[in-house]
Amino acid sequence: MRRADRLFEIIQSLRRLGLVRARDLSAALEVSERTIYRDIQDLVASGVPIEGEAGVGYVLKAGFDLPPLMFKEQEIEALVLGARIVESWADAELAKAASDVIAKVQAVVPDRLRDYMANTALLAPPHHYMEPISFDVAGLRHALRNQLKVQFNYRDAQAEESERKVRPLCLAYYGPVWMLSAWCELRDDFRTFRLDRIADFAVSDERFRQESGKTLHDFLKRDQTWTRSRVNPNGKADHAPNGKCHWDAGENAAAPNGKSNGRCV
Image (cartoon, rainbow, N blue to C red; front, side, top):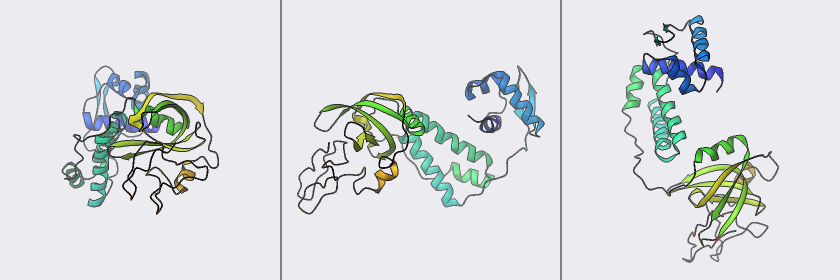
């Protein structure tokens, strides 16, 4: 975490929680208590009205505020609904981040907008069906951010298994499944995988660089992306130039003639 972000988090914690001990801040921000003491001294020196002492705790004087953020009502609704969807459908780490975003925005908007945020009647109930995933998706997101290859065992719709090593490119949610689109080293082409069919997932230490023809931009430019194979007028799935479909999720999407498009491998 950058120091500027950490200082902001300290202010937000003091704003939300009232009296806060350095020990609690150090645990939440994963730094030493000495670092917290130093950060608070710097905040006080810069004019932030923090009172307290080591061993007792710190409070933020009433009346201190950051410049207010102004939103239209539609923008508030979009922000709140989006965060609630992430809280309901994403992994625990991302769900917490969405909750923290809302808390940060609520802390700096005017009272009228704060009340509107709290009472926005757009919901994403957590009690919905989603195919279970056997690994922590936070690790996959880490690999995406840091361009790390991942490896796993994949089971397709016909229950055939294969070992894959891929360059992760993006994640997409098609209720009730999460999809990973990637460059697959086994197929030497783009592939899309259902996360609920992945086992023995591991993030490799091997980084990859952006290469022409193997990037997310290249993937999205192609006629067949993560949605499904195109179906031509004769009811058969169109294939990529190398004779392989891009869809490797094992989905048996129905063609216009009522038959399955089959498995693309």
